[in-house]
View 1 (cartoon, rainbow, N blue to C red):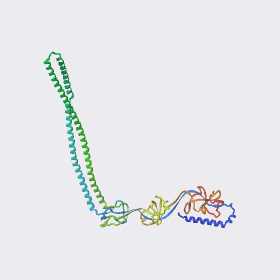
View 2: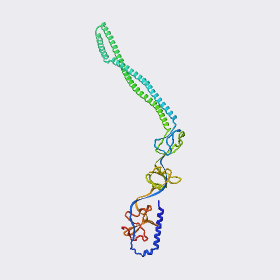
View 3: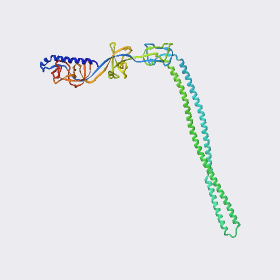
View 4: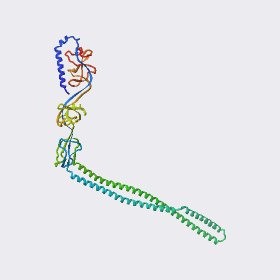
Length: 475
């Protein structure tokens, strides 16, 4: 802390002098009239801020400095700037022979065009072939459906159950009538004396007709069953053909889309790879024209026309010297008091430049045991050239909203620091806790309150309880 040793030493000297004077003049003081007040200067204790500044030595550098290292290598064909020239971001600094890179780009473009054309042709021919195959399957399914539909229509038409049933019902009635006749003749034959040949013949004829009718009924039933079976089979075939047609159409449409999509994806990959080859070749070609990445001043150049440029060493060094940076080192205790954005002042050749802290190191330098601090400075490279050493100051220790009193109003003895307060016309010795101080003021963090009247002048008669009277205004 600034002036800490001086303050303690002057405090002890003051105490020694006071004790010596009191010892030498003790008897004289005792003989004086105790009621005679001491004329003193006073100050009312008030809240305030106290800030201490520390001085450091820093090194100036450009706020932004870059090495321009080419990505390509070869013979330099053109150089447009020299050391000391001002350049803007994007300005072309120099060019490298790019004939091979141009040929590579042309070859990549031709290859990409060929791949794209081949992809279009493949897509068209394969799609035509696929479409023909799928359309053939759809036509075949439609044909099968139509044939089944015709068969179902004919079977349904032939299966006229009402007509057959009427015939069968009619024959059943005839059969029933014949059976009744046979029963009647058979009964009558039993009552006729002797055997009547005509009755027997009639019965035989009736039975023959009955047999024919039964045969016809059986044949008609069989025909009906045959027609019903054909109808059911045709209906089943029709429904199956209809479902088969729908499935074929849906499958064909899905297959058509899937094949097109898969083919397109595969071809797109090839086209994309070829296009990436063009982009890569263009990127490589661009590397043969070297541009400035920032605006600034050229401070170093290593390339010349017809010389070689390589990616192993910088061709240009460019510094932005519109705003400069100062770098300095501090101990841990000071580092803990600083914050990014704090104001600093840099002095060179009698001129003062303002800056602000931009970076506070978090790792200590193992060799120096110090932390590195960086701050930008509102000055250009002409005012603060890169590499020069400068003196700078920064506010380090701060005591805000504390009681601030004159430095010389605080005294020290074996029990610590104390002040004299003017209380009811008498001096009151009061021990205090102090904080930071400078050449003029000192902060008090305990022992007195805002509004207390502090005696700020010294007198050999100033002791606890002695009467005092303010020189200006008083209490």
